[in-house]
Length: 155
Image (tube, rainbow, N blue to C red; front, top):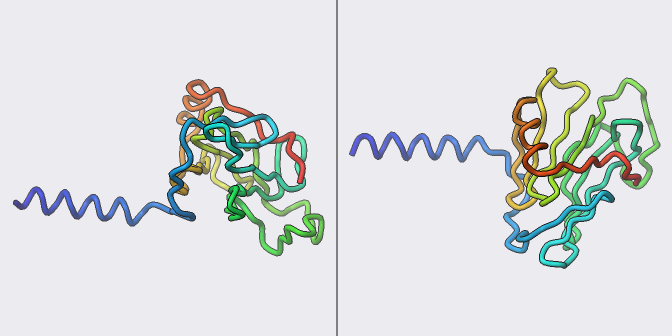
């Protein structure tokens, strides 16, 4: 009985540590991502990755806009205005580096310019969960999922 109680406590602690920013999406099955950031699931447009003010390998802000109109900010700098993304641009502001998406749209990952080296941010469009990963994990995901670069996107 004591082992079950400890196991339940550990499960609750793990669930509390997850950063969920949106609801679970039942319609995210059999998905495909394209090089323009569009995500189609079962042949139906389901989401669009938005890269604001893209540069050679970065975006000033990064969002995922679902087909129902909900926009989830994967990274949004302070004082950022999505209607006027060029307002108050400072070259020293942190940006998103190397944003990519798995070809099956199961994961979006990127680095922040102000993050600890080797630390990556991940986001699962299906579950709405943010997490962090090490460079090795990202390398394995790239090999396993045929990653698509999101840099050519312009918003």
